Image 1 (cartoon, helix red, strand yellow):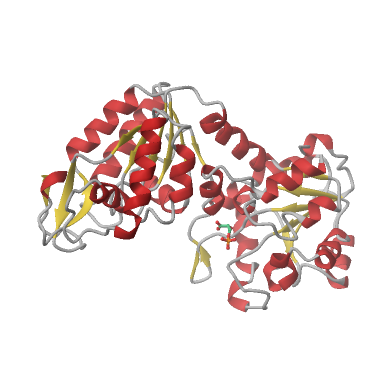
Image 2 (tube, protein in one colour):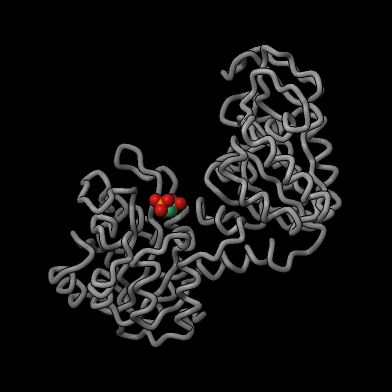
Length: 397
Ligand code: 3PG
């Protein structure tokens, strides 16, 4: 696909799809990383004298105008991130008033449009809505990798109506993800945690065969253990997924992927801060207790395995890291992986909702080689799916 370098930008209206779906509490942004990560694109467009029109969604208003889902609060956050630069805001994302505001922009100025999802045409990928958007720009740039798993008007339809290119963040995300799974340095390990096998089934099936080592942690490890006849007491366990879990293990064996499951676990009667816990062998989980973290022996085994690897893809925590002390295994493996990254021995790529929070909690987010801004899109990419937003850019080229 094309990049910003392939477009004529001076004096032209650049319609840029970004992902400003950021966490907001009491009108304040609590994590501005998605804003900060599109700054390279905005700066490049400014430098080339484009009129910068930013399009984004916020929340899931389902085609209705929901004032609490306005992108208004993002204006200040973006302006701050740009060192106090002026950012104008449009009360809608299509229509004559928006056009008038765009006409008034000087080269290098920025206008943020209101939530695209206030119009049902966005999510429906409606062609007349895409045409309304296309009227506002001369070129289209997609810098929203984290929304690329959606085939919406602003991620798909528009790319087919205007000269289209990937923004800098889109380029960076795709480069790093391809380093991790496309042509990775081997051996490559994937650490997949999280609560449920059912939500990560396609992901596990895709990774088996692509990676040399598959570390399974979190609640979903219980389902795998139980499928092998191990009693897991009152632990979270999807009994109905037992056949599927066994099939994945069998496929891993056939493909020569080594699967690591916990050999010891931290158990307690309830999930709460600082309850009495014990660490037991996986084969002896008491019937009245539940598994809430991987044990320290397991953490050591994972780290020993990582020392022999060149690439690690991480998605999902190893335990209930939000509740201490069940963050211990996630913290110690994350810290060891960060250490191996800093010493140049391991390329570490992480992404997906909870994962970033877990790495921030472990204090290692700065030390990983790459952390994706994507949640759902990262998962779909791990599942081996074609992302519609990326495909639209490829088709346009
Ligand atoms: C995200 O936050 O992962 C993206 O912005 C996509 O949001 P969505 O799941 O509402 O499409």
